[in-house]
Image (cartoon, rainbow, N blue to C red; front, side):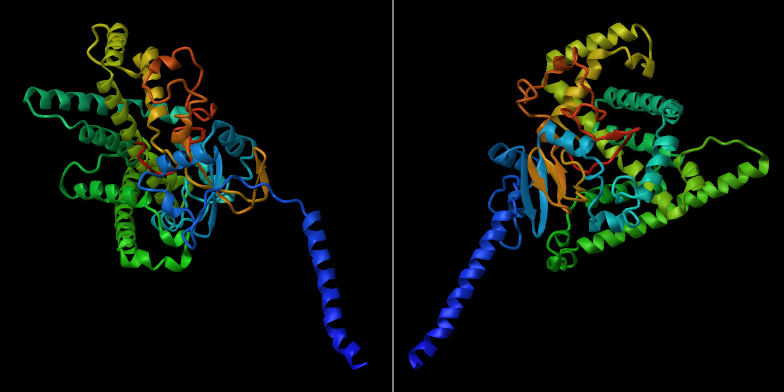
Length: 447
């Protein structure tokens, strides 16, 4: 009897264990396993952050070549889907755009751009739709773009004269500085109503803008490993962000007050002054909302300048291509002193040169991260809600399955091609998906 009692507890324990094991295996078998995208081995805490390197778009292209054009990484605790094919980009940006329309909350743009209240960084929702509508219909409509033609032509002519003067004095011409000045002056005149950065205290504006662009392209470790957020305080990143945010606040207070005073003068005398972006935004938005939208518009000068620099560099390295382009310009312009925008429409080879340069040197190689709002599938793989998504536009532009000799600068590939960079053809998306001229992208230099 005693022996039976001693066996009872182990026997019942064994029976319960067998039942539990059976139930667990039955449940696991009945739940279909999710098919996740391929993923390289990750390290504890940091995940795959160590594999990004100093040029993330290049590092991610190498990983995609090894693991596939759709791969799953982990930046700290955050799952991040990397898309490096036109097929995946089309699925994310077009076929399932609503699911991937949200933006993850990033601490740096959140602090620099008034709580991410601009068209590029704001989360999907009613506010973003309002800002996009104002941008598309009021700021970047075809009518508005054409109305700024005089500004573009005046500043371009001024740049040409400046280069002539510098060249005649045997001074080395720094084209990077000249192009930076051109894009800045055009954007400032169109957006703010006048130039900034030429003399006196206005020089501060240029320094503020350079610092702002550098910070907007930086990454806060705390976004991916929250308990390491204190590092931003130690390395000085927090202090830099706070300083530049205060400087932009002060700058925009002056800009907004200038426009209010000018409007009052126009109202008093019954004038009908020409409207710039600030005037238009003040009609629709509160002051901080106007400031956030203006920051996006002003910052866009960097991508314009980068695009021009790379195109000129490509032409210098390819004298045959430059000769063909020069001949086209001479044929179209003839004996005219100046080149107008109407002339540009007749230059098919020039357009091909710009497309080819954008293909090789996307000004925004990694498009601004999206975030999935629900579970879904992309090209057969299961993607969980809350996954960040990055599209490597730089890698797509160099995909050998899409482009013959992708590393070679050959504008002729576009002469008989309908491919454009406005977001319709996903083989070429250097600015992301353009919606009425508005692109939601990240800030990066596409080398």
